[in-house]
Length: 349
Image (cartoon, rainbow, N blue to C red; front, side, top):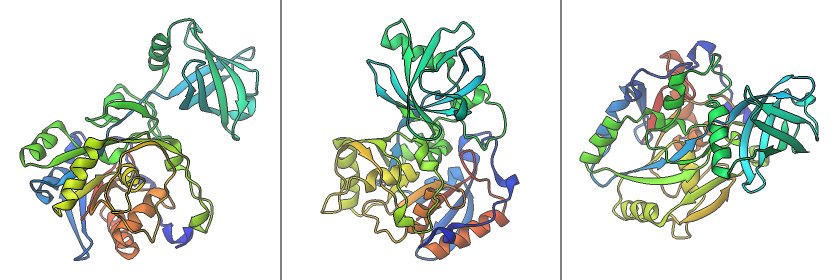
């Protein structure tokens, strides 16, 4: 398939700027791959599609406040710094994106906080907007991380055209987030409330947790017509033996195994054994899933509605079947479903 197969017209008013008031009360489109049917539900109805022994695979990564605003030495120009990943904890080296990038050169110093309590020096250029920063801070490592948290802002996506508010800190985080390290939320999980999780648990549904620290590479636009030439950024992934045991036992008993979000799906598809079971994993993955793809573990998926030409849409197409995916997206636009991070959800069975 080619990039042009994933283009569609998305009206601006369908971009969700705010989340649903209650997590589990967004809308849910249910797509049955075998019957080729589409139903319209509420997200809390998702419980009706799962039985005892079925498994939900959750990405328990936690978003950290990755967006900082600082001032350039001498000129005082306001610079946005987006923390991507820590390169060296001892030396406090970080991979970052800076904006506006043309003003930031090797050797420049940036000052953060009203009292300039945090300083960073630019020590390398990585990409057109990418830089390596060394943070200069007198306290312990723990104090340094606390200072980043204090000065940082919840990195809600740029297309949300408003200021970050206090609610975003809590709402742009899944209720099961544990392992800090993501710069964007695994958004399919944002629809789960504590009440819904409890109801699923009482019904006998099992949860398997994996950790994929979502980076900005997930959202990088695909710019090559031949999809096989697109390169994904690597993201850190951990899958424990406990998660493997839960998933492989469900697979053995032919239960429903549901990847909650494209990040969970990419995680498990990065760790498949030759017997098509789930393996433990501790490292980095740059897995790019696009049609055609033979999925080995999950037979069900929960996801949000994605942007045209995105890698996320390509994965959904590979899982759903391209024609059915197109039909579902046409229906979503017609029925005014909300798109992106704070948008509505889709259950594919």
